[in-house]
Length: 347
Image (cartoon, rainbow, N blue to C red; front, side, top):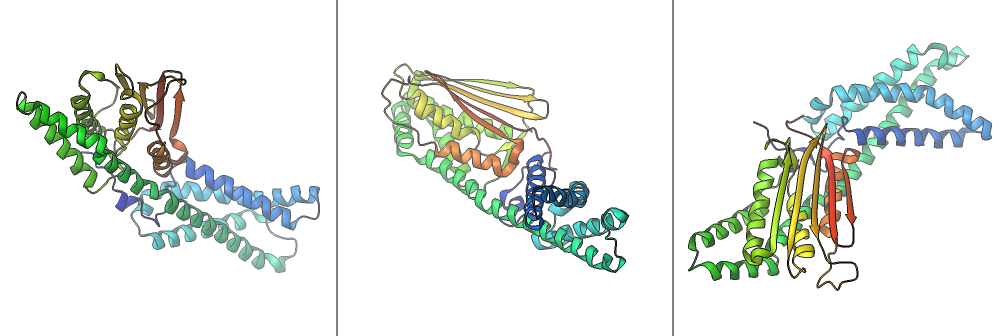
């Protein structure tokens, strides 16, 4: 049985970066080469000398970076089991050993003409490699600290959506309206409301089974349909996705809440929300479409985009460059498209 990953267990404020993530790899390569260019600029005496200095730095930096990334990719699972500082120590030791080994194996390519400077040059290579390594680790730690706020903010946004007076009061009134005529339906609605509050206040997880998330969304939609009667319709399209597929917790519900509150509710005749989830190769595609007022029509309330911005930040923290997010709007339609890695098991 697949297990959801806990925020508290895996996304500590001082967690090591995921060295198997494409975005992490690209950031390391870009930042490393950027720092090499800066070093070349400071060492150069002119434009032609700058190019020469940059090539000399790259001749050692490139094999060290690629070899280190390969080794860290292989040992990523073991590194994730360590506390932060022991993990940092292991990473530094790995980078140091690789840097010295490549310097020695490189022979005349890296060694100066004067044999008396070999030890000095090797120590400088080791020191600069460790400085670059720790600068990158500090960058990823700071980035995680900044973006991790989105995880707490996301949970807060979900809780606010659940207890929003507009939603809460109208749902209670709808339950009271059917209590005598349809007691079973009223009981089900109250159970759904209790489940929503229980989920919002429970210990959060960053990845949960798709089946759980869909069930949560169905309960939310059922409550909205109760108070909006026949004005709200929902169509689910799910292709090639087992219930054990892992997705970020509370990813779909804020999208549906936005679609209901800012799209369907202002329309006199209501409308239908289309939710499409499908697997495309190694990625999971999510699309939510809803009708909305035209650009020239007066809206009773405008969305502040907080929930959507929070989703962007959560995806950036969880998947970095491997996740995509875009909003498309036409005159009478609003669409949110999300792409993220397809996951079924713990890595």
